[in-house]
Image (cartoon, rainbow, N blue to C red):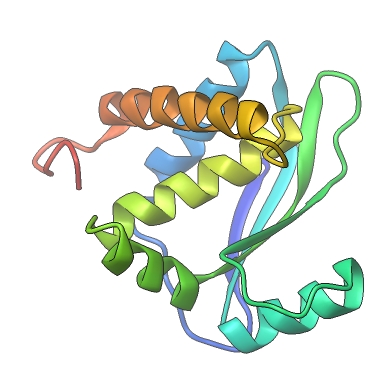
Length: 149
């Protein structure tokens, strides 16, 4: 599958990589899209701030920055994820880190499918799509693991 996971400026290993790859492809298929190539890069707050400043002229931390290279019905791009911010958000929203991380992962993928989040209505559509995708993930959980973990 054309989905890869890397870390930059830190050590991070994503659990359940194969399940997540299959899940992303299923979410894309449900939206009538095909995955071309998606590269997830897990990094620190420091690195995501550098990217935010350099490419978006924003001087703040964020959990995710996506660079969309999608064409027609083929989605692809680079997704930078600050695991530090994801952890902070999981604590703030009182959810498990892995659940918040999956939400952020699929958030980036949904951007490649045309979902936006710059206004209230678009954010609501994005959140609903995230929730549907997260519900779908349960069918990709390996046997012997918790359905929500």
